[in-house]
Length: 132
Image (spheres, rainbow, N blue to C red):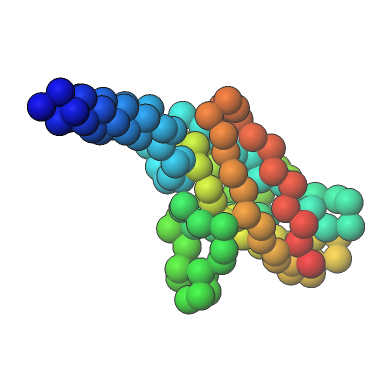
């Protein structure tokens, strides 16, 4: 009888310990809106910035959508007087960022993308996106 009681106690302790361990694990960060993070995107071509920028953001992803531009969750058009685009109101997490813009000197269009992770420790993140 003592062995059965010890076994029940050990099993109960193991189950309770497992619940405590699982509850204390960090939840994965899921990108999206509703946060207080700002990503400032700087499309770069040959070391210089571009104007007339548009940023496409895909939430919770490190890959571009298979459906092209229509697969992005949000599109942000930049101010024509700045070389960057502010993307406010984001949560910590993963994003795929795609940028397109026009070089004001050559009048050529450029585009490119990259995965970005915003961590819980930063409230504003500058991102240089190389475009071709």
